[in-house]
Length: 318
Image 1 (cartoon, one colour):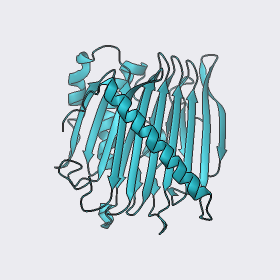
Image 2: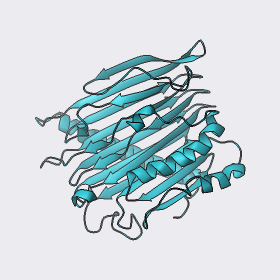
Image 3: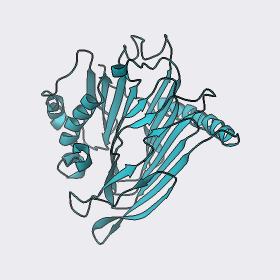
């Protein structure tokens, strides 16, 4: 698989402007749905991590609807809590809108994950959109890890997802996104519907990483095209940084980190340094394989970026 390309600032800013236009049109579409008599189940979650007396506390947590967190766990000590986001319905249907807003205050750190996959179910006949927006702010000298489990997009779903990460000077971020299309094991392929996803990361307001994925189900879909997914159904990436040095000293460690992982014949994977971030990508047919590969890279880079040994959330083992 080709390594991700290093984009110029001009290209990144062009993507950014296009994405903002898309975001505006998406908002109008959602507002149109809200003004109709169609059913919808909105939910929102607001979290703030603060550093207090050398410890990181979850100082604020507010929610509306079926989206909330358990109390923090501290498997790594009091400085780096693990928090699990729970969404009891387990899936998102037409008209639903989930909003997640997380702030990590100066000097604080933490890890947030989910206990299971997010499912975007088949849309109603009116093709109402299913929306999930995530906004993360990492303040000066703060660190944050964002590991939502994979999203599974059912056939005929209409998905709109956006993730925006804003880092201040000295802030660190590790996160991944894993997307699964259809349920091939059940012979349910993503042949109809739509999926639009944007992922932005900025440092001091300047775009550093932009990823946009747009899929329309159908025979000419990017999923089937040889220049797209090549018939694969799972795509994902992990983003780790910023690293201010070249990173050449541990490139070999990254290359050898996943040699023991069994890859399928169609699995493609690569990791490279793009600007000050390591970007690893996976294309294949297994979300579990994607996670194993990403965790192998995480186990190498996490100690270098955060000065912390790998400590997977315990909920992943249940």
